[in-house]
Image (cartoon, rainbow, N blue to C red; front, side):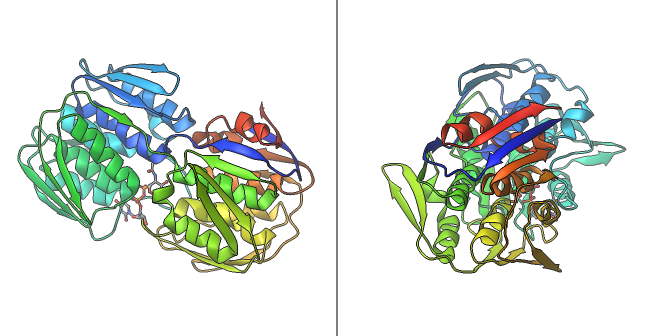
Amino acid sequence: MKKIIVCGGRPLNGKISVGGSKNAALPILFACILTNGISKIVNMPDIGDVRVAIEIIRAFGAKVDRFGDTVYIDTRNLSYVRPNPEHVSSIRASTYLIGSCLSRFGECDILPFGGCNFSLRPIDMHIDACISLGAQLDGEKIVAPRLRGAEINFNKASVGATVNAILLAASAEGQTVIDGCAIEPHIDALIDFLNSCGAQIVRECRRISIVGKRLHGGNTRIIGDMIEAGSYLALGLLCGGDLKALDSPIEDMHSVFDAFLRLGASVVAEAGELSVKMIRSKPLFISASPYPGFPTDLQPIFAPLMAKKCGGEIIDEVWPERFGYLHSLSDLGIRWNLNGNRATIYFSEIHCGKTAAPDLRGGMACLMAALCSSGQSEIYSAEVILRGYENLEQKLCAIGADIKIEDI
Ligand code: UD1
């Protein structure tokens, strides 16, 4: 267990670098299981979820070496072993074991796949995709002696189910067409990596066509993390000062920029440096929806910003119940009301206090609220925040924050 001690109320100044995207890195790591060879992956974030994913693939016999932000993964000698349930239950991306293990080994245990518990997180679409390609449920396992290409129709855009369908089809026999797929930038990042491994995958709008191939090792650079970038930009507005985010995936962030503009800020992107400045704040309405909509992972991050400025409303169409974090924000003075899937955030006197991080992004929202209020705050269960933010203490202290992360 960890806690973050925050002495808040300081402006944040300078440049903060944005690392590789968590949600791009994780499917690519699990996709290595499909390949037979050595892959080189650059800009791999060193965050909790990535460390767990690497432990999971090492257990199958993968050789994983990290040099700075570059990771080499040798998957020439793999064999199936039941994954460690503790690892599997700590990250959501462990669901990608279903597609990758069925493809490589013809079997996968159905385990308590984990991640943030902000809502029930069903895997029915993942299982349906497996069954479409010829897999069968067998007790607590799913098995497929051979996978054959098929037509898959998703009736909602699911990142995880789209990733698994790609992993299943990439080396299945014949052709697969996936309709209704998610189109997040990390879906294209996975496709690019698999194509570098010899796959034949093309995405056009919400349709992905795949011809199954034998895959060798590949090369890729993990795209920048738009959620980390959006978090730091919001933090800069919240705390004041002159903060610039480096290495942001600017082209993926239109919906985020639009939210900053509607909040009354200006967004400046110059020579790869991104900054937002408040001009005249206005109440903000956010409706989180699948890409290219406003990302659900950033709606908790915008809640303290709304509370500090003019208030606003949040609807989440992806995870309608993703508002548990508001209870933790109450400990820091943020006032809100929840009516079904609509949260009203009131202008609030945010103050220091003690609270617990409820999940990764909700925990970051608590840390942000603590950073913008004078006095000492303590955020407990902080390890959950480190699942998705790299070198958090060093990065924030370098721009003028006063935080210390301690083991408890
Ligand atoms: C991924 C991200 C998470 C992000 C989410 C939405 C990772 C590791 N996690 O989660 O950070 O919040 O995308 O952008 O990349 N659904 C079903 N049945 C299924 C699967 C999903 O009904 O079998 C529904 C979910 O309940 C949800 C919606 O589809 O309402 C979207 O979920 P999905 O995109 O699958 O989220 P994850 O892949 O779990």
